[in-house]
Length: 505
Image (cartoon, rainbow, N blue to C red; front, top):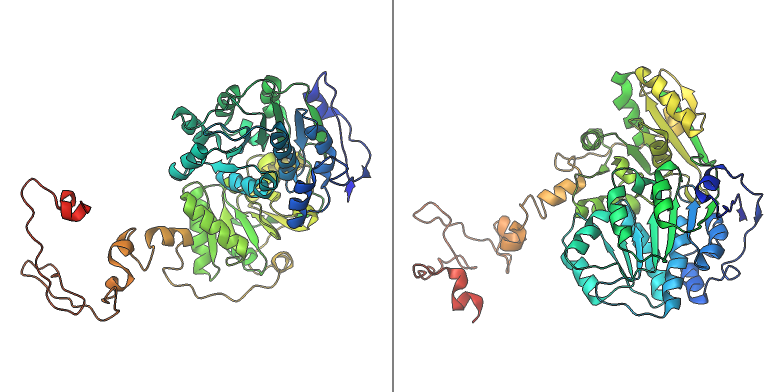
């Protein structure tokens, strides 16, 4: 593997250099050992199949391992996570300090829950190899596990800004010992309303610590963070800002509004793993239902789902149980799934950076991929402006309908439709949230057992009696069908829950 391009910024104006300095010529890729990576980390990487540095790692590790502040820009899927995970764990290990309750020494800020989990999974084996502990914190789940981990003491916290601020305000986490702070997807942190929270968090970290910023783009949105928190940063950029991935082939499919659903359905019917982007949460939910009605199982990913539902859907997609994922832009920064061959912009994004990040879910780590943007005639001008800003020249096909031959060229032969029942046509996560067992409301299965709902004894599996009391309610019966003894009356003013018999006192 060869380093494609590299640039080092002068200390006078690193931000300007990151945007304007020409790329240097390719150089041979060094080994992890020659870059100064410790043997335990090299072994952990090799166990995960990473035996040689990716270009972004090759050009940044020497400076980041030396403790310098650093700006790293590389295409999505270029290996940026490992590029900052290695110096993070090495620096904390070399300091010789121990983990303390509620006081991490390493901090990684990310914009989405999915990305937090992905980053934590990459850091885990490297941290373990260096004898470090880590945890991940984000919203949408309870505080219990996160506060317990912090109370026990961790070296590294991977966090979304909102939940981290909550934990800080509640006194569960302090940042006064942070030695290395990382902002992953830095431009997205500066966009999308995260900047105030990021600034409040970074203001609580000690001055003089190492700061690493990595992103697919480094533009003016990031300048405020660079100016405020970084000291003489070195900039490494593999590609010009916002450059498309060469292994992607872009297609522009123009269709009438009335034919759009048929075109989308045909693209989703192929055998390969496909990721479809919609503009709204409602649009994602509706499209999943429409695909299900056409015999194409699909799952959704957007901000209205609970964290458990999001994780289940992403796991189903990653494992191949479901071949189609319909997502909003929340997934553009948080999905790292191998072998996504086809990305479809069902609704073209409003600006070119979102387009590039969405498209970056395919053609990862050198693989090839297809990106299809679906456009109606009234969207021509906006889409042309977006693709021009993104630096791509898509293959344009007009008057496309559901049976147009270009769709088979893009998606491959249509797979046989699967018969999906009414229950199955609901999004998988929604079914699981509403029906933990067989149509039961949450908690019903735990209280009554699976068999009780079907008229079976919970313990023996024998048919359960359905006697009715004088009040019209089901009477209490024993497992063998005999009437049960009535409950003793509860003294007035004293609940059964508070009695010594119930509580075990």
